[in-house]
Length: 265
Ligand code: IPD
Image 1 (tube, rainbow, N blue to C red):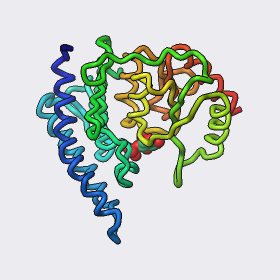
Image 2 (image 1 turned 60 degrees about the vertical axis):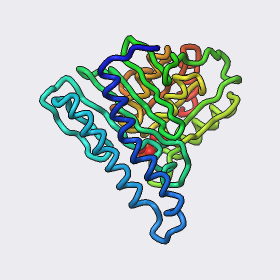
Image 3 (image 1 turned 90 degrees about the vertical axis):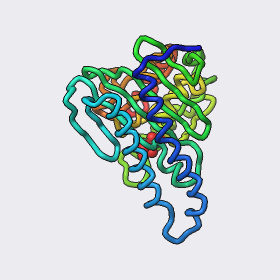
């Protein structure tokens, strides 16, 4: 049995508690798909409810910590060196359409550095968790990024910009370059789970632009603790600031950066 820190236990406990309502709400979606009004309002209320639960649970355990919340924005705490970064539902479009690939994502930032991450996929009861220096896990199992070295053997995850998002042309260039070199490209619809899958070696790499801190903060800790590399497109560490991310195992990270750079021109 693995021994987890009190901090991870707090994060996992909060995720499980918020997930209970989320799963119940997800069960209602099928009914709502066929109603005239559609499920959009219902989903945004599920999102807000989950965020409220997460905030209350984490505040109870660590009263001084600040928050960066997808719905509620930035909330300063008395303790200036700690901040929770939370997405109550990552994969909201999936949730809305009754597609079961969504999760809760919670990260802890300590003195400006990402310190711990929990990504919980409630329908599959998959609890991905990692803390700096202590490794990455899926439930009780230690995670390690894939060992594949050749792009031709690899499955790569990505996020596709959609209506109202910029960067369609550039994305098509990136996709064109990547798809010509790899075994498969996947768009699962949850950036947090894409990163968890890289940490678990299910996918060999993941890239996206225009992504928000709450979508990727926990996943970054997971990939790094599973032995992978995560950077922005320039190879730097400003992913949370510039919304660019490339995550991969140690063999593929540089080739992916090179490929994306040449595709963008
Ligand atoms: C979205 C998902 C998706 C990614 C989008 C994000 P949300 O987050 O992570 O995979 O491609 O860029 O906005 O809206 O479901 O929390």
